[in-house]
Image 1 (cartoon, protein in one colour):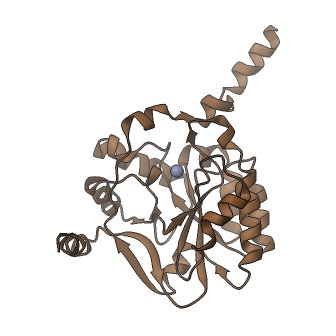
Image 2 (tube, rainbow, N blue to C red; image 1 turned 60 degrees about the vertical axis):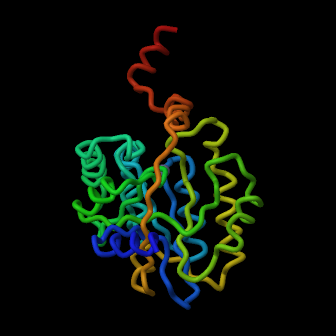
Length: 260
Ligand SMILES: [Zn+2]
C-alpha cells in the first residue's frame, strides 16, 4: 500500500526515473557511461557500427571537453549523447546549486539533444536531486540491468550477467570508461568491448537502439529511484587521472622531461 502510494505521488509529480519500456518488439538500449575514452571509445564505435547497433553514451563533461572529436563521432554515427554530470560526484552529497552547476556545465559542451537525458553518477539520487533534474528539463534514465563491468570481470562473466537481461524494452548499463575506481586494473575496458562484440553477435535478432528511439517504441516505465552511496566507499574511490596520471599538465610534464 505504502509503495503504491509512493508510486502515485512520484508519477503525479513527474519524478519517475526511466528504467525500461514495455514493448513486444525485440529492441534493447545499450548505454555506456563515464566516457568518452580515447583508448576504448573508438573501438566500441567501430564494433557498434559493424553490427548496425546504436547506443546511448552518458558522458562526463570534463572528458567530453577533452575529447570533443569523440562526441562528434558519436553524433555523426547516429548515437545519442546524454549528460552524466561534469566530473561525476555523487549528487546526494552536493548542494542543489552544485548539482545544477554540474548538469549545466556538462550540457554546455554537449550537442543539443531532444529529449534531454541525464543519468545520475553511480545511480545515486534523492527526491531533491531528481527535482533539480526535472527543473532543468531532463528525463532521468537509469537501467533495467547492469553488466557489473566496473569490476574486474572477464568478458564471459559479463555476458553471463546480461544473458537473461536481453529482453524487449530493456536498458543495459555498461562502461566505455570508468571515471573513478578503487583499483586501476579495473580501468581496462577490453573485457567490456569483447562482451559487447559477442552480445551483438549472439543477439543478432535484436535491434539495438538509442534511448530516445526506445521511448518511441513502447510504454515507458518510470519508477521511484532513490539511493544514496556509502560515504566511506565514495571516499575510497580514486579518479582515473589520479591512477594513471593522464590528467597531468602536458606543459609541466615537458618541463620535467627537460629538467632530466
Ligand atoms: Zn558513471
